[in-house]
Length: 511
Image (tube, rainbow, N blue to C red; front, side, top):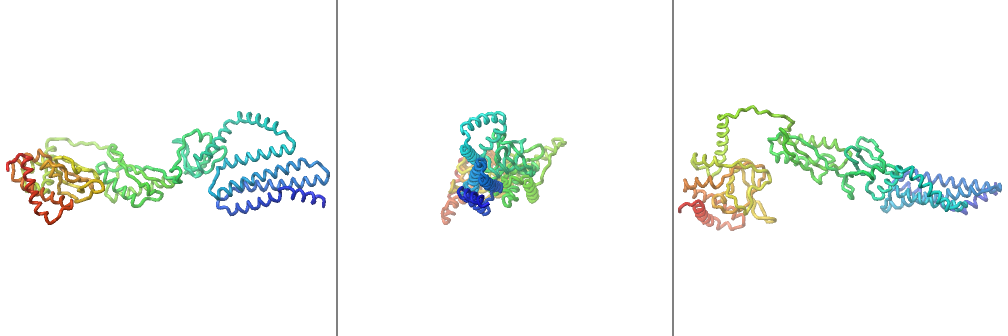
């Protein structure tokens, strides 16, 4: 027994066994403190190889005591020692040290390097045991060719998994979709043969790597930023008679002011008008989802928010329907409609101080030539510098008057129902002196030069009243351009006489 312990101690201390054991214990200690937990499988493999190495040394020492052949035991001890060293080195380097400095290698690459180390170990052990390495390599080449022909699909999956991890086209945690009729989900694992994805139904789908490298794959989110924002679209329907700008403003402002959970604030949600379908108007909400795994519940929350936003704005939702009009178009009905339209136009003319004092028949003549002109919010009705001989009367909505261009552009006035603009161009033919933009949806009536041609020629005295109104408006724009207030009244009188002359000249009136 003393001789056995003596031989065993000599072999243990003469080999690298103590260093290997110490390195294994240190690796376990580092793994326990590592912020990123490694798989215990790797440490169990190293521990098993170290135990087998020690057992082989004990068996070899026992054989030496009995004067038996120890070549097999020594070869096994060397093989287990080198395999444990390779596995321990791979675990320590690739799974503990490199991740601490931010270098994370693909799992398949680690396995490939470990496999190369194992091949080197087998060659060293073979040479130590007296095997012919050249013959082994030749035999391995023939065997590899046979395996390659018989396992083409399996090898294709293996090479596909290797390429996917090396080029980092797909990473664990990515949300991917292989097509409309294929499953989509979050990548949970990339192995040699397959890639596993977890669907939104918590089902794990195993996809062969060969199929992945041959398919067109959509990866959700912005590549390189770590963001997994996914654009979603939710439709809703509203009565087609509601102006689209009102619907867009009501829903879009509600969503942007207080986004629903899992809706990104940047990029902000948008509401788009998709058109009129049969008896209803279709709209779509495009927003960015922050968690691709919870898509349908978020869509539901968006629809709930839309419902309440429309109710607050008194905008009714619509459903698909068909309308059959049975009204007979008779002369009496046409006359009633014309009478209602004339009353609306007369009321519009009566709200403008420029036409309020005109006789009724004169206003009726002008009303018959008015043009109905609606404008959407944000739309330019006229631009500074344009030549457009038309006057606009506001019936509904609100407009903003701006002067200047670019950074120097500024707001100088706001126009509401009952006010008018464009009179300078109508009465004198001058270019527009300001831009008018619809601040909200607007309904206007437009008066063109032909309507005024007859009016001014039949009632020349009205030209003086019009000139006075125009002078007041022009002086207001002049003051907006930073002219001094103390000379405003004198310039107003001068402008009045000047405009009166232009009006008479433009319409061919005598002085």
